[in-house]
Amino acid sequence: MTETLHTIGRAPPPSFEEARNKRQKVRAAGLDPNHWYAVEYARAVPPGKVVEVVFWRRSVAVFRGEDGALRAIDNRCAHRQLKLSGGRVEGCNVVCPYHGWEYGGDGKLCKVPHELFGKPLPKIELRHYPVRERYGLVWVFFGDPARADATPMPEIPELDGPKPWAKLLVDFTWKAHHSMIIDNVSDFTHAYLHRRFRPFTDSTLTDLRVEGDRVYVSYDTKVADGPLMKHFVDRKRTNINAMTLCYQYPYQWSDTDGKIKDWCFCLPIDEQTTRAFFLFYFDGFKIPGLPLQIPRQVMEPVLGIAKQVVFKPLLEEDGVAVEAEQDGYNRHWQAPIAELNPAVHAFQALTIRKWEEYLASSSGRLAEAR
Image (cartoon, rainbow, N blue to C red; front, side):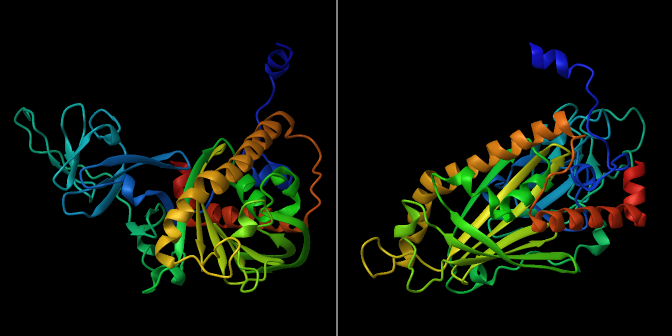
C-alpha cells in the first residue's frame, strides 16, 4: 500500500525531447526504422496465417499467401480500423474479420463482399512493407521502402554454406527498453547475476573501439565455465579465455575464437517493451569425457536440450534483471547516473546519435509528425 501511495502522482520518465542527460535520452530513444528487423519465426507464419508485429507502437499485419510468399501491410482495415491480424488469409490476400474487406500484399483494397450502394470499389491503399525470410526468421523493413534493397541485413556465412553450423533460436518479450537489453548483453560486469550458469566469469575489459555505427568490445574472460557447458566445449580447439562483442547498430553479436557465435536482434515494441531474438551457432561440441566431436547431424537435438536446460533459463535471468531495471528507472529516473563501464557509455552514445540522426532526417520528421 505504501508503494502504491508513493507511486500516485509520480511524474513519468521524460520523452526524448524532454530528457536532460544521457541516461534519460537513451531510455527514451527509438531505433531507426531504416534497417531490417527480425519480427517473428518463419515457422510461425505458415501459408494461410496472419500475425501482428509491432515496431515502436506501429502495428503491422504479416501474412503468408497460398503461394508461400510473405507480405506485410498496415494492420488496420480502412473501413472501421479493425486489426487485419484478427482476420484470415484467403489466397494471397488478407481479409478483415468484420465486413470481409480484402487487401492484397500491396495494401490495395481489392474486394468488398457486400453491397456498394451504387458506388465504385473505393480506391484505398494501406502502407505495405518490404519483407524477407532468412535464418529461420521473418524480417521487415519499417522505414523508407526505397532504401530497403540497399540496406544490408546481418550476414552469417556460417549458416549459409553447404555445411551450415548447428544453431538454436530463442526469443523473449521483456517489459524493458531496448537499450537496457543492449547494455545487458555486451556488459560482462553482471557475472554475479549468472553465478549459477557461469557463461562468463572473471571478465576484464581489454579493448573498446567506436568505428562508425559500431562499438567493438573485447574481454579477457572465462567463457562457458558453467557446470554443464564446460564439458561440451573443446578447449583444445577453442580459446575460451577471451570474447569479442560488437554493437553493430541496431544489432549485437559476439564471437569466441571463431567457434562460438551469437546475435541478438531487438524489436522495439514501445518505450518499455522489447522482443529480443537470440541466435546462437556453433562450430561443434565435444562428447563429454572424450576427445571426440559430436557428429554434426546430431548437434541440433543436442542444442534442443541445451536450449531448455541452459540457454533459456540463463537468458530468463537477464529478463528478470532488465525488467527490474526498467521498473527502477520508472521510479528513479531523476537519480544521478552511476555507470562505471565505459563500454555501456559508448553503447548509449551510439543509440542516442542514431536516433537523433533519424529524427533530423526528412523521413524521421514526417514519421514523428503523424
